[in-house]
Length: 404
Image: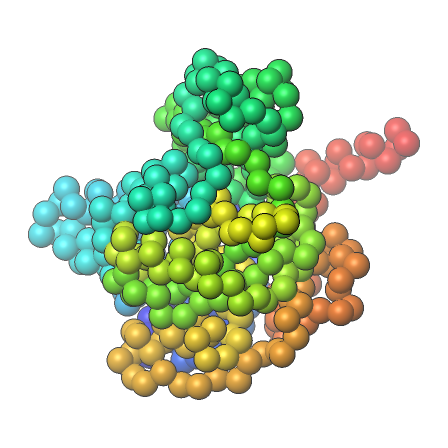
């Protein structure tokens, strides 16, 4: 029997569609729950079923998709989706025997439930990492301006402020002076306010910001010492605390100082993989996750700075023995031997599609261009940023052109 997998995504990222293609080619049966319309998953030719993901009733829409597809595991493709699965697990636990299937499914998909509150808290995850002997920058939890002042007195500048529940570089600020740090702190604490939620709904058609605002969510915030260096990250797939496959990269170009990478270089960095193994083992994790690092200039020291408790843009790339996460997962789920697969490229430079095209990276021609071959509708969909297709965005764009 082909393993049955349900992908979840509350954004409109390229990663879930790439995962669906890779999993299907490996022999899995893939369904998805995602926003409609306009999600890239709906433009692939490989999805067995797609289900609507409601920003107003996310748990109910998730549960309906699970009941219809009856998956072996669920793979969340964004941070909000991870939190929804955690919340669905807690709800199922309260049902007792009636929720047993959902409880078992979440534990099989994500690992030990004791890890759930840790992986979505930047501070708690890094606390665990420090206990495991991993190298970290100075890190403190910040709840008040007074906490921020105490941090500055001990650690100085620059510093990085980060908020829980944010992703893709949102909710991350680099401060170089006390006034700037205080301004950023106040901005971040208001990230889930009403104005932002309404803007996201109207401009981006993203209803998922409404619930945090309605529930008066205040994000957890950390301050981190700034490490002067180059960004790096690794991605792995694991099962009950054991890493099955994975690899690391360094960013060659990125969307700004705190944004995601657009072109990466595959590297052999044992420190990154050791960090992944220790965190997976300590927390008993299953499924995909990624770790972000800074490689310090001068020393080359590798500093862990945060975790992404979900699949990342690396996860669909099949780079041969020990580096094919999709094949490793298929073998684990099916109980069949691990097949040796041919790497999609020998080039150590990889340009993410469509990110490298959107920023017109200077490294594009020298890189392996990770375009989803055989999926022309998906290619066209990814090349058209979602906000630019909304009526309000187009009206504002026309107005600004007339003024110019």
